[in-house]
Length: 107
Image (tube, rainbow, N blue to C red; front, top):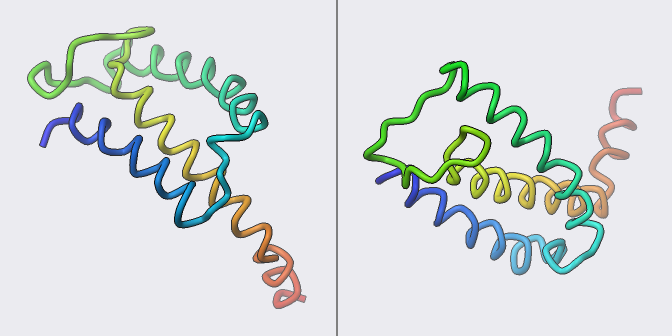
């Protein structure tokens, strides 16, 4: 399976996870898109730095070849899926008091 195929699968999986498993519906909230707009430039900067210095390299046959800030477009798709998944889980667990329960057991 190619990096492109994995990236294209990650986005709908993250959206379905947000809408139907955690049921946070972050994808429909302005707060999510504001957060994503703040995170995206840092993702692009990091991707550019890692790929332009050949710290991270991609084999051409596994990506589309379309690049943004020196990194494959697939990185943006994966980044979007990861950000959506993490924010959705953060809100999901926070609503259930996971951090508060953990804090009590350490005292």
